[in-house]
Image (cartoon, rainbow, N blue to C red; front, top):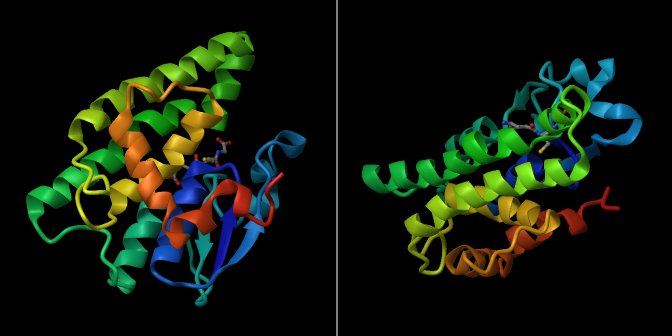
Length: 211
Ligand SMILES: N[C@@H](CCC(=O)N[C@@H](CS)C(=O)NCC(=O)O)C(=O)O
């Protein structure tokens, strides 16, 4: 399999963690999101992912999957061990809720394209953009902090999709200097996950395209 990735992309980071947790080997093709206005905007990459974002996962069959949560669902269906969702339907819903706070409510507002848009179309300076970025992380993390039952992972003793989404979002928070003192449970879960090789190997700094 080939993962179209970028070391700093938190969505690609989710896919990397899931691939590692499932013990699946993959090659990495780096799509630089900053160089030349974004290599993801080039026609060559558009032919792979019409939405021009990372991650995209090319399967051995040649099929290409896009959207990190869809990729992770696919991996979980095809390689069910270890499962990324708990068996109990209520617990599954809680895991998905945390994953979706991150993937649907925080991350889309802080992504490269919208940040570029508010800078170029609405003339916002870097200080305003940073404040915007931090605001949406804080707002989402306040909810997640109250939902976590660390034992030691987000939703209990097993790693789930919630952890797969949370750890990359914490990395973004640190990169954009969001103070994390008010989120001790999130910080504890992040530390517990990063002790696992699957998470550690997926870190931005451990990628072949890290700068
Ligand atoms: N919802 C998508 C988000 C994918 C996404 O937006 N990835 C970012 C990097 S984290 C990207 O490629 N951004 C390029 C852009 O916004 O132009 C997913 O979960 O895969």
